[in-house]
Figure 1 (cartoon, rainbow over the protein chains, first blue to last red):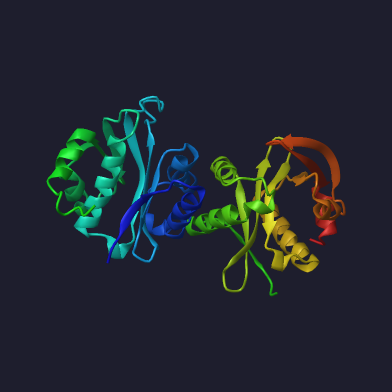
Figure 2 (cartoon, rainbow over the protein chains, first blue to last red; figure 1 turned 45 degrees about the vertical axis):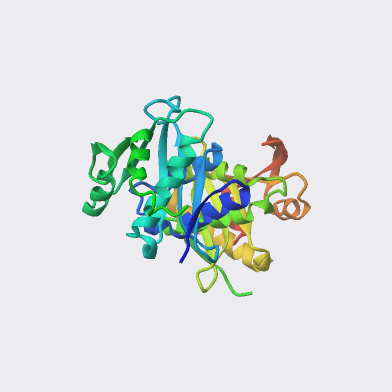
Length: 171
Length: 162
């Protein structure tokens, strides 16, 4: 099996990104009303920020993630902070460490190569123990709620963490 | 062509399939209506609007009515509606529209009039809406000329035999 992450550089792939997440919407388990969740999914498309698809060797989407520059707290003026809007892999592709690391590497490499400086990544996850152990390996908890846990990681910390797995990330 | 079944959009999976359908069929409003315009419209509309879905017997979506109610003057606005070409017939239209009217009567007790928008260069819909509504205004929406039609609710109910 061979999977790869691609940036959705054209409308065709942005549509594929939207369709994929909408077709798997219930499995996303976003703890918000649909209108709010849709904003998370759609805002990277509208703002011209980036969406990524993970496709298998038959070209079928098996995962997606997206981000925007800036945070609500910073009135979206803190563009050096990137906010991950959504990240999802279909069930059969989860718990595959190499694929997870490849996705992180794709994001980190992309952010490191931008013309504008990005220093930090923030994101939220569910509250299950597995997710907590996974993201706790490289990110710092910033908030703990009933349904979501907030994290932050500096881009340099993320790159340092990923450098330990260079051989595992086959790019 | 079978019949369509009206279902109010309530559950997340209904919203998700509505959005997919809207984006896929938004070109039917206007060939110039872009993907990004469709997404932006949904982001704005979903919060305050309600949606009636029309599914076939296998649960596949073939149409919708996106609407909102303004209590101040008892006006229901139909912001947009699409019906798949295969189901565009008088029978399907009257039945579906009647199902929607019956539903909104349960949602709101003080509906006075219904307003809806149609492209100024869409002769088929202009003829259709003219059968039960009056043209009250021409507006510019997003650079496109649109006509606003209005029908008193009691008159619409009478026309649809509700």
